[in-house]
Length: 613
Image 1 (cartoon, one colour):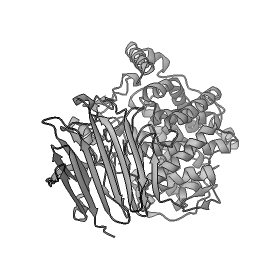
Image 2: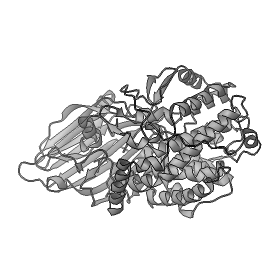
Image 3: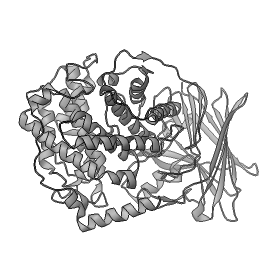
Image 4: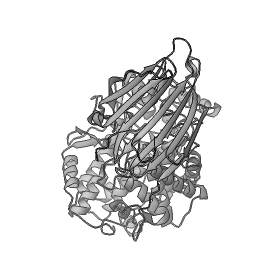
């Protein structure tokens, strides 16, 4: 990670131990007052819309939204777009709903452990406190001519009263703080003229926003140096936006100027020149896409511009993600870390469907969409041109190492890349196959970031992917938390097309912690046939073995046939193992892992699919 990272982490840890952070981030600070509610209503800074009556979205009765609203009102909350928990109507904002653990609200945030076996995954505390569920309520109100302003503001008021500034777990993460401010702001504009937005409530909300912004600004180096991922993009964007939407707060002039510079730097650094993303995660790349949509759209409304690199990286991100997207289901491979993040949900599409979020950014950049959806209207975008054009063929993104074959409704996705930034999973030379919207060969997913060692080893490790292990080991050495040692630094891939075939050839230098092995993989996709031939080859030492893994949905087991022979041409026994699959964070379901074990160092595997359509 480099000397800058190490030096900062040591200094940051010492500051926490010595209580320096307690002085920098005060508890019970003086209340701030900036602008009256009447003045704000009369001179509201430009936003996506002015209020609930100025949104260019056709109203439609929506039973799905009505159901989700009733659940929220009754205290049932859907975590990570998947699993429902009954939180009750008197929600305690510092209780982990999965474990029942209650954090100490009297502790300064710097004293809160974010990784604890006793407490469980802290994301279960943060999830509701980011207030993304407000979009369901606001959209329900809009489409059903309802008015739940009293409920929305009572929720925000409840958080403010139960979470004193800089105390407890909900001030531990500046990204969560930033999201909370963005989502509160969306609600403030929608319910701008509501009688339930009283002067007292407005002042309390603005005071809380001020001190949360103060926290983000003064802790920004943690995300920019120690984390350097989507957290830094979220926080720097929030600082930039603070000057656009809260210009009456004096400090936002400086915060916004610095935030804009940092945001531009983070986008240019984190999105590679080929449009791929340094976190090697489809979902975290979507997070960046949504943040770019907010930032670019608001800058347009305020007649501001970013550096050229921001627009170029945004466009290249769309090119990469669309090349990776299954054109039938609109999903992307369940590849890389997937923590369930979908910050601004403005359609009823399933969480795994990326279409509206990609189109929102495309609309902001070019005024076009692949298909129109409600979400563009919420950003104030109108008169968009629909351009459904999608490209077939081969796509190579060499900087991160993604190789994609798109043949009408058949997608072949291969990962083969070197790491210059922190890897998330030991998944090189993974192969994903989609046919007619069905993910036949799939990535096992992520499940949870704070769970048992066995589960972490499976989901983050090589066995959770469609590639091979040597002597039962991962491609890299697993450290604690998100750390991997012995990063793969040498990986070469090439994708080409012949008259009858698409051919990928790649190799990686891996397994350094057990002596080092080169893994070569060739994938031969026969055109116009649902057939793939895969050759894996490793030079083994005496007593070594390789194991090849294929993860499939057991419901479609009868539709896929996988056979293999070894270097000597002898058939290799197909082994069936019970495994896990996690399409949504915090949820795992039984799955099927097929595998072949071999001591000759070469497996020639044939994959045939009988399409269900």
